[in-house]
Amino acid sequence: MLHHVPNSLPVHCVTTATRLAAVTSRPNEDQKRIRKKLNPVKMCADLSRTPRNLLVCERSSFLDEKNRLSFQVEQLRFNYKVSLLLPECGSAPSHLESTLNSFSRFYLVKKLPIYELLDKDFLQNAVYQGSVYGLSFGTRIDEDNCVALMPNGRLVLSLDKDSYEMLGFEGRPSRFNHRTCSRFVVPVDLKERSMAPGSPGYRRLLRALSSHLKLQTDFLISHHPGGGASLKALLSRYDWSERRPEVCSRRLSDLVCPDLRSCDPHSLLEWLGAADADVSCENSSSSFLSTLTCPEPTTTLAAALSASVSGLLLPQDVQRLVEQLRCHLQQEQTASWASVTVHGFADGPVSWGDEEHGVLTGGENFYNLLMFQDHTYRLHLATGPQDGCPP
Image (cartoon, rainbow, N blue to C red; front, side, top):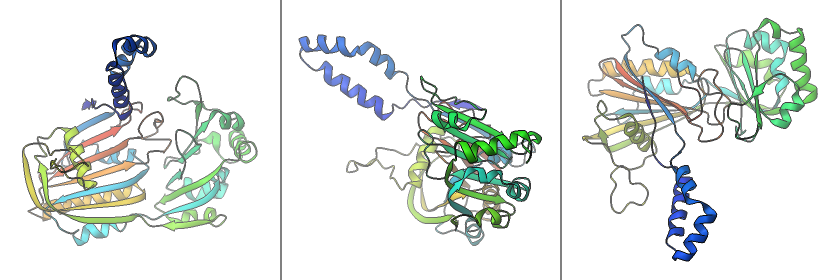
C-alpha cells in the first residue's frame, strides 16, 4: 500500500498569503508597524501546515483469492453516489442499465424519534434479522446532532456538548474536538446481551432518549435483504415516503484520456472528477472555468458513457454493479477498462468501518475502482486528514 498526501494549498491559505503580499507592498514605515502586529513569520509557518488528505492505493487481481475488494466495499456503509465511466460506449448496455435501475429503494422518515430504533419489534424484525442502514438526513456533522444505525447493529450518536450532558448516557469525547471538548460520541451495540430489551442498559438508554434528550430527526433507512417489509411496523407510525435511487447518464464525445496504467493516482482522480463534472481538461486560453490539463500521454476516445446513481446506496448493490462490469469487460472487446467511484455521505458520523468521521475539514470518504480487461484492478481509497486509515 502507498500513502499519498497532496500538497495543494487550500483556499483560505491562499487568501492569507494574498493578504500578506498586499501588506508587504506598502511603504516601509507601514510595513514595520503592520508586520509587528500580524507577525508574518508565524503566518508563514502556518501556511506550511496545510490540511492533508489520506489516499491509500492498492493493486490486485480479481483472480487472486486473497484480494480484499469485497471486504473493502462493505466497509464504506453509507454511500450517496456511485459514478461510472465506460470508454467507447455511447449508451449503457441493457444488463448494466438494468443493474443501475435495480439499486435498492430506501425510505425517508420525517421527524423520527430516535428512541423508536430501540422498539422491541423493530429490533426483532429488522436489526436482528439482516442489516439495517439508517442515517440522519439534513444534519451537519460539525454543528448538529447526527445519528447512524449500522448494519452490524451499532447505533452511533454524534452529539454536541449540551445534548450529550442532557442524554446522561456513557460516551466519549470526539476525536475531532478543536481546542475545547465540544462534541461527544455515544456508540451502542444493540446486538450485545447487555442491550437486550428489558436489560438495565437497554432501559437506561430508552429512558435517556425518550425522557431526557428526546432527540428526533429526519431519517433515511433501508434494510437488506428484507426491504420495506422488515420496516413496515416502524414506518406505519410516522410520515414516510419511499425513495428510488436517481439514475443519470450522458454520452461524452472526443474525451481526452490519459494512460490509466501509468498515470499517478492524484492526476487520475482529478481527471475522473473532471469527466464526471463535465469539466474540460483542454486548458484553452478562452476558458476561465478550469486550468486542468489531461496527464500525458493522452488518447482521444470517440465516445464514452458517464453514468451515476444517487441516494442511500447499499454496498451489496455496489458489489452487483462491479460484477456486471467485470462481465461487460469480458464480453466487449472494445472496452479495455471501467471506472467506478463511490462517495460516502460527507455528514455521516462514521466513515470507513466503525471509524468516526472527521468534522473539522472537508468530509471526504470515497473510493475509486479502476478495472481492466485482464482481471486486474487498482483501488484508491480516500478519507479526510483526521479520519482513520481506510482498510
